[in-house]
Structures are given as structure tokens and as C-alpha cells.
Length: 216
Length: 222
Image 1: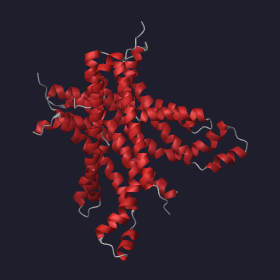
Image 2: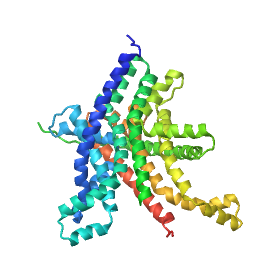
Image 3: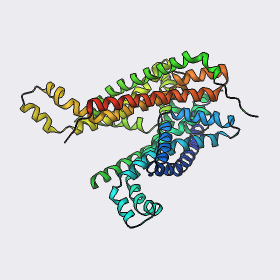
Image 4: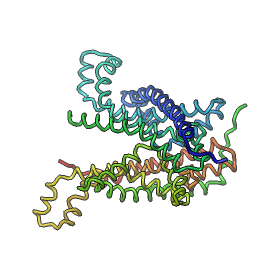
């Protein structure tokens, strides 16, 4: 039986928003932790650490997110880990996010004038204190705009989880499209919902970027 | 139970993998060229004195930039037939990718136009050059120099984005990999090979663009 496109269809598409937001937050938090490690490795003075980090970044920036999700999805069972779609997709997106955040934060760390590190060194601060008290707080200000704009990319990226069967906003729109035979409405509505989530973030990132440009 | 890796079952399919790579490069090239044309028109429209033209251009750019590519592809391929506009998978893929590239390159191109100072045009005019000559000899190269790195980044991004059109069975590397998967059931090996192919293409093109950038656009600028 063909269902009508009504309130209950709208609500079931909206139910997908919860998974989209949750997945984005998990990937952003996980990617942030791993990404910070990648950024610190990339800017460290040990060349082998730098090389590992830049290989990691090259891999994730040089392959499609869809392939990364496929590799985790089909790879984990191969290595004996049986996990559900939630875990597989979270791991895939976390790895993806960590490479991009790592590269963004590397740029921000390197944008902090070198004299700051030298001064901290001259004061006898350890690497840890130098990073925590001198470099990272300044790098953080620089990184806000590109980080928020990556968050928009990440939210859009979660839609690919639909291809490996994870039910989030795109997948729920797909299911409603196929039960109501109203694909234009279903995908149009999903697009509007994504826009409502992403547009304010994009605007915020642009505003921050402009404010920063004026200051320097 | 341990899994036995077996890449050898994929050997007979090497021609199909190669064909997939070629289609992916073709798709990205069409998308970036069409996207550039759309981007130039959009960038000019954004500076138009007519308000509704500006609004239309801004709406297009923001709508594309703030929605997932997957939804754009679905909207075009599954949605538009409802109002009588239908496409073959490949045409839908080309259209979706071009519109996507167009919105992202519009911003890049606007940056390039903004970066050329009025003094350049005036200096050209003072030398007695015609308007077209000013563009050809004075404006074009510095403008290209500014936007070239961003545009080559766009190309690599388009190359990676093409994998998503496999969701509407448009023929390219990922969809060919998926069809080999249904024949061999060697999912993991297939996606390892496919990922490596994407990596080689993406890093290869990034390398070529960097070399071009160094050869043509690396002159000292005051």
C-alpha cells in the first residue's frame, strides 16, 4: 500500500536527525582527541613522528570517505571483530575526522609565531607546559573558524553512513521516499533539515574568520 | 576462524578496475570544467547590481554548500522525475557533480577577481593596451596564480566525491568495485584495492598540479 506523505512521515524523517547529530558529535569528539595527537606529532621535532602523521593525513585526505567507511565496515569482521553498524560507522568517521582536524590544527599551531615557542623555551618551560600554556591557547583562537567549517563537512559526511545501512537522516528520507513514492518531497525535506543544521554553523565560521582577518 | 586474504581472485578483473579509474577521472574532469563555467557565472552574478540575481546566486551557493552531496544526487536522480525531469544515472551524476563543483568554485573565483587591484587595469590602459590585451597579458596570470592551488584542490575533492555517485549506479570506480564484489564476494580485498587506486590517483594529480604550479606560477611577487 502506498502511504501518504503526511505528518507521521515528516516525523519519521526527523527521527533520523537524532542519529545524524549523535554520530556527528561522536565523530567530532573522537576525531578531536585523535586529531590533537596527530597535530602534535605533525609539529613535533622528531622526524619519524612527523612522517607517520603526514602519511596518516595523506591517506585519509587522498581517499573517498565512502571507501574509508567500506574498509572499516568490511575490515573489522575480517580481523575478527564483530561490531554493529553504529560502532563501525563511528570508528570510520572518527578516523576520517581526526586526519582533517589534525591537519587544520597543525596549520593553527604553525601559525603561532615561532618567537613564542623560543621565548617559552628560554624561560625553561617543558614541552608539555610550552604547548599547554603558550602555544595551544593561541592556536585555538586561529583554529575556531576552520574547525567549525569542518564540522559542517562532517555533518554532511554522516549521510554516507546511509550507504552501509546505518539509519540516519538520509536513510530515513530514503525509506520514506520508497514507501510514499514521493521522492521529491522526502529528499527535498531532508535537504532542508540538513540546511537548517549546517547553515548557521557555516555563517558562524565565516563571521569568526572575518573577525580574525581584521585583527591581523 | 582466521580469514585468508586472497587478492589473486581479483586479477582477472584488472581491466575493469582500470576502466573504473578512467571513468572516475573523466567524471571529475567534466565536473571541474563545467563547475568552473558555472562558478564564473555565479561569481559574476553575486556582484550583479540586480538584487534578485544576487539572491539567486547566493541561494544556489549556500544550498549546495550546506547539504550533503548524497542528498543532492538522490534529489536529482530520484526526485526530479516526479516533476517530469528524468536522467540516466551517468547524466544525473555529471549534473550533480557539476552543480556541486560550481558552488564551491564560485567562492574561489570571486577571491581571484577581488585580488586583482584596479591599478592593474589602469596601468594596462596607460600602456595603450586594449581591454582584451589587459586581460591576456596583465590580469590572467596573476589571477590564475592566486586561484590555481584552490582549484587543483577542488579537482582532487571532485575526484574523491565521484565515489558517491555509485549510490545511483552511475558507472565509475566504486560502482565497478561493487559489481565485482557481487561476483567474487571478496569485499575487503576489493575495497583495499579500490582505496589504493583512489589514493594513487589523488596523490598523483596533486603532484602534477604542484609541478605545474611551480613551473608556471612561482615567480617572486612584491
